[in-house]
Image (cartoon, rainbow, N blue to C red; front, side, top):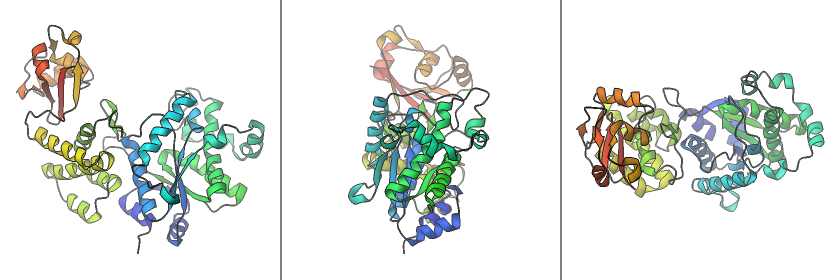
Amino acid sequence: MTENVFDLLERRGYIDQVTFPDELRERLAEGPITFYIGFDATADSLTLGHYLQVKVLQHFQRAGHVPITLFGGGTTLIGDPSGRSDMRKMLTKEDIDHNIDCFKRQLSHFIDYSDGKAIVANNADWLLDLGYLDFMRNIGVHFSVNHMLKLDAYANRLEQGLTFFEMGYMLMQSYDFLILYRKYNCQLQLGGSDQWSNMLGGYDLVRKLDDGKVYSMTFKLLSTADGQKMGKSMKGAIFLDPNKTPPHEMFQYLRNCDDRDVVKFLKLLTDVSDEEIAEYEKLEGQELNVAKERLAWEITNEVHGKEEADKALEASRVLFGGSGDTEHMPTTELSEDEVKDGITIVELMQKGDLIASTSEGRRLIKQGGVSVDDEKVESHDAIITLDALKEGVHVRKGKKVHHLFKLK
């Protein structure tokens, strides 16, 4: 007998908030349900931060439920104000359409869209041609401005300035749920915990207008033990597109995760069994590196394939073993004009985004935390020559960060 997906999500630590959890659990046990997750197309690649939603989609689909991946061709024109201190950059329709095409290709790697097993939708289909007066008479009348201004997404913006344009986002997202309910009998909306207010708007709208039995469920935002958003590195987001984030960089990012995070990430981001994870939970200190390798390999394997995951694992073991093999190392290429008669180690590290400032570089070197080709750097004025860069220079920051610098 297939396990109720609600129980699986609860056991693995996904669930944050749910409307009528007992009722939803019973409905999920009765048979297939159509549900949706929305993706606003603000970039041309999904990130590791989206990966939790990918895993949720997979868990539901494996349990026999039908996912709708809803792309925000309409809502992205506004931009969700949740968690923002300023208004999002406005994208053109052409940019948004391109980004949606990229998202579709990536999600089709994880989700089975054949034979009606999943549905693709774009809210541009119903939002772009809305009649303003009709929409406000039929939909806007059900939303209280007093209530909206109490919500964090809006209240946090009042001092900096909040546009009426952005306040329309909640109405649009709520309307999405109503349309999907009417068109596909979609009964469940899923999303991150920062979406709870917007999702309740849709939940209330469907119940008010159509007396529909619908539900909303949010998941805890994926963050590291130190509070950083999961999928962010010193260089920025970790993308699923290998041209934006090479597989070995994704692997190293995951391999370097905090000891406190590895078990949580195994539960949320992989299909490693509960029994295996329970064994990893017993490990401490250096022993946890086995679990970190498993985490990094599982995700890299699913995103980029076994060959890339195996290469990244091999390169990682070489790096952590202290060897100078640089084939799969994160790399920065420099022009001869950038180097000329040589470049200081601090300047070099800045070009590779290994440090945020000159003072940070000097401090690291003074503490003995920087090596070049396995030789500890003694002075922040140390010069890396043009000839050395022609051969390739392996810089190690601390114990875990390895980087190759070479000429273009």
